[in-house]
Length: 88
Image: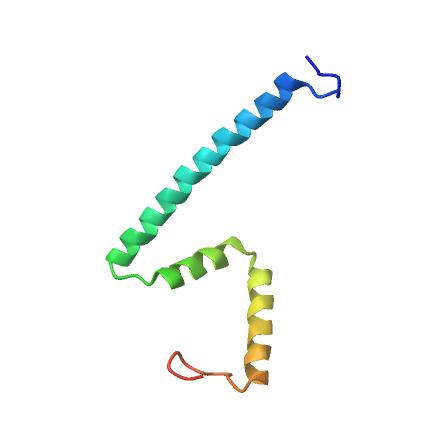
């Protein structure tokens, strides 16, 4: 069924409802991820570092190597190369 503007209302409604269901599922998954990070923090893990590790694991090895090379270049340019966590 379509209206005078050429929009198939039933199809449009179906798309909107699917998107709404998926958004709700995404929220539930997001809440679950937050719970896992909270649990890890409760066990003494650094959540910021865990997030960084997860981010790095998503990347291909060559992407990580390229990022690390650029980071190293920038740190050298700023005189921060080899700086430990307490330096800089």
